[in-house]
Image 1 (cartoon, rainbow, N blue to C red):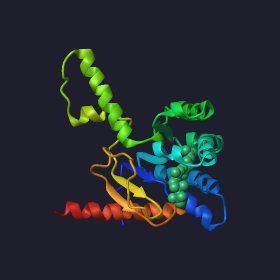
Image 2 (tube, rainbow, N blue to C red):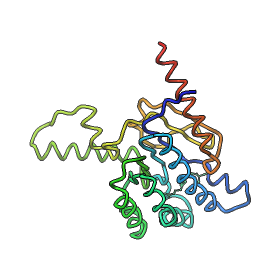
Image 3 (cartoon, rainbow, N blue to C red):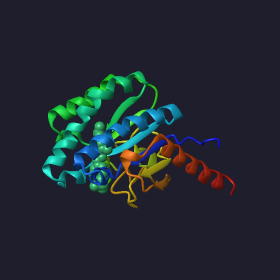
Image 4 (cartoon, helix red, strand yellow):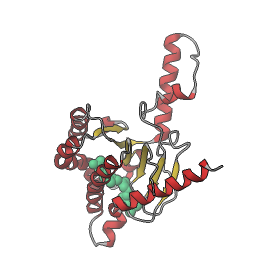
Length: 233
Ligand code: FPP
């Protein structure tokens, strides 16, 4: 089948904990395997010609998890980039992020900022990690920024959808075409609420650490078929 490659894929990487529990391992082992899988799926997306991949790595709600798990999740970017930054860089992948880094330990912030800096001139896949990200907060911050612009200018500045979108953290990224959520949950959990307005949704029962390139291609096949159906109308 000739694939219609989505420009921007967004993934809710769910099921790390259950993946680990099934194997008698601690939840953190599931997150570690989940991070490994980000590398695999990013390289696959890059090979397929996807322009951007946004992965929901840490939500504003995740701070409520047990302290040891939060601590581990905060350390993961360091492990991840220590191991894979060079490979991502060589593959022409550009790392970016969404979310407010200031709540993370300094070391985590530095590691993410370094990855962004070292890959900023790359022209292949944009690998965007959503960390300490929540979409309602993103939209609220955008509204605040817009209000500040109005105050500075002393009147109600004309606003349209494109202009409002430019206040969002995804400013400059292509529209999301396909959203995949792994591990059977049928929710969007405060992820890219504005940006998913026209996206296709695919929910798979497979846990994130088990989500392979083959599964990715299957999802893109399903996306291609849905598009063909719309094209025929
Ligand atoms: C949801 O699974 C997953 C998360 C809350 C964290 C996702 C994070 C990663 C995959 C790694 C991030 C890595 C980097 C480099 C930023 P869950 O724990 O809720 O699984 P469960 O529903 O089975 O318990």
